[in-house]
Structures are given as structure tokens and as C-alpha cells.
Length: 435
Ligand code: GUN
Ligand code: ZN
Image 1 (cartoon, rainbow, N blue to C red):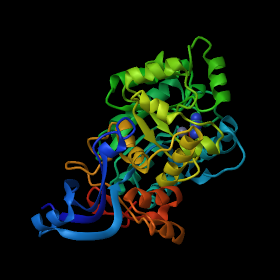
Image 2 (image 1 turned 180 degrees about the vertical axis):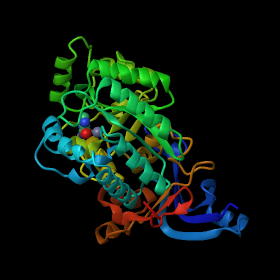
Image 3 (image 1 turned 90 degrees about the vertical axis):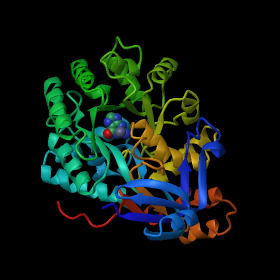
Image 4 (image 1 turned 180 degrees about the horizontal axis):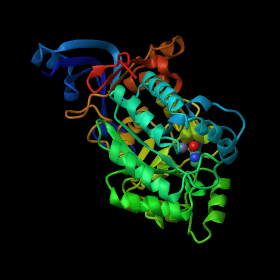
């Protein structure tokens, strides 16, 4: 019953974390590699010649010099903001009020929510992103729309209803009770259904009352296998506002911590201006921090200390944060991570960047046993990169002496044109059949 497919090309393998170990010891490219897929799963990764010989019955797809890597994992995105990406001239709080909240209001219409979910998921796949952890809006139907469309594309995804009960406009607020009830109903409906995972999602402390954070902390305690995603320490005026709204809190993290919203399955976006106590506590609990570099420069938030946080062994993921982020492309996002690290005095290696966009993000979402690496037993979610997709990149790749030199121009200058193919759960991406 299982079809056998053999993908041949250059293959990227990660056997450990290249931010905490020398990248040479844990990341590898086989210039003549192969990935055997049986049904929905990767069953072998190895040398092309050996795999061909051992599996003469497999259907072969030869990608030549293309790089076969895990599908990208975008660990923090707002699919409802697809239509307002690249909106001009505002920093965080003004940007939310001017562009984001009015657009999120439009998703009260389930038809519009479906249109945006379809548009977003197709754009993500065009860019080689096979899994994402998304915020929806406060509207339960926006969660349904996302998971329904993801299911039609057979994608492994994480999402949750964004909860806000203050400092948001009329029509875009819930209550502590309704946030609890709606999140619980959605979680029961979607968590573990097919490839869907639910994340309990308070937007951020300024838009939740302490009562709402408590209610969501209680819900998480009842469903500890869910993720909990939110924002932390993105911009200095935001942090000052949190101090005003929560005068008894020791710091930003404490507004979550004191309401039961910290733990190994917490996923915090941005984390730019953390205090030492916050870093200690995050390291202690095993919570993940998600780097959103295009967003952090686009909205003017600051330079996350990726290397410093990695040195504390904190799980780290990479994300577009669309539409605060300025791209749907995880390649563009890796480029921004490189540039921000350079501004802080660290040159991230291409192996580290590609790891962050795949295994690192998968690990931060506790999906590392399913996706994010090319390894036997992993689901066959794969992106195939053309390392010479544009004339500007090709003239650079032509001169490259190593695979890393050949890959780096695609990381820095690549976009959806570099995505030669996408495989989802063992099938090459085709048209969506209905919906
Ligand atoms: N903080 C709270 N909400 C948001 C959002 O939608 N985008 C970003 N970048 N930061 C936020
Ligand atoms: Zn965000």
C-alpha cells in the first residue's frame, strides 16, 4: 500500500543543535544524498547510490544539485495579518491600533477568514513553509477557517484563538469567561485532530486583564499537552505600559508567570529586552523563545540577543511574525537573523540559520519527533531549494567552493523563486482539491 519515493539531490541533515555545539559536528550536507519516503514518512536518508541499489522499486525524483531540506517551520505568525503586511510608518502600539486591529475585525466574517486562511497558507507553501504556529483573531471561526484550510493541504500546524479583553476596540474583545470557554471548545475540537495542534493564545499582557490571564492559566493546567503562545518584551514603550498595567509584577514575564502561564510548553515571541531574572526563569522552565528578525527591524523593536540566549540553552525558534514581519519567506527571515546577529557582533553560519528555520523551530514547538529534520521516522514534509534560482544568486553560486558558500547567497537573496518543490506528508504539493 505504501508508495516508495526516492528524492535525490544534496541533503541537509542535523543531528544536534549547531548553536550549542560546533556546527561542523552536528550538521551535514551529503552532496549526493537521497531521502526515501514510504507513504507519509521518511524511512531512510543516505547516499544516493546505496538507496537506489537497495530500492530499485522506488519512484525516483532526481533534483540534481538542489538542496533537499526539511520544510521550513515558522514558529510565530499571524495569518489574519496577511493583507496588511508591509504597512507603513508605525511602531508597535500604533501599528496594532492603526493597521492590525481594524484588519483583524474583518475576520469576524467567516468567509473573509477563509479567504485569508487560504491565501496565507498558499503563500506560506509557495515559500517552502510547511508548518507554522499562528495566532488567529478573537473569533472562533477564524480558528476553524485556519485549521480547515490547513487540513485540506494536509499540513501540520499549530494555532489558537487570540484572547483580548481590554485595550482593543469594540468588537475585538472577549471576556475572561468567553476566552476560556471558546478556547476550550476549540481545543477539544482541533487539538490532535489530523495534523492540528492547539495553542492557548493570550495576545500579550496589555490586552488581557489579570482575570483573563488567570482563566487561560487554569485552562492550560487542565490541558498541559497544549502549547501556550504569547508575546514578551518586544518594544520599550510596550514594556513600560506593562509595568503601568501590572504594578505588582516584578517584570514582564511575571505577568504571565503569576497567572500560571509559564512552563516548558510556553512559546514566547520576540524576547528582545529581557531582564536577567526573566532569562534565568525562562532557562529554568524550558520555555521557548522565538526570534522574529524582520518584524523586529520593520516595527523598530530592537536586536534580540540570539547568541546570548542560545548560550543559556534556551530553545530557540525562528519566525516571520507576518504581518509585523515584512516577508512570508523563511529565507528572507534567515537573512534578517544573520544581519541582526552581525549588528550584535556574531556571524551566524548558514548551517545555524537553516537549523533555526527547521529543527530549531520544530523543537521550540515540541514537534521535533515529527518534523524539522530529515531522519527515519519523521514525517516527509520537505522543501527543495534551487541554489541558483536567480541570475544574481547563480553567478555567486557558480564560484562557490563549498556547499555552505553555495547555500549562503540563497539564504541572503532568495525568496519563493528558490523553492523548487514542496512535499507534504510524502506527497508533492499539488492543487488543493476543495474548500
Ligand atoms: N504584540 C501584540 N500583538 C502583536 C502582533 O500582532 N504583532 C506583533 N509583532 N507584536 C504584537
Ligand atoms: Zn506576533
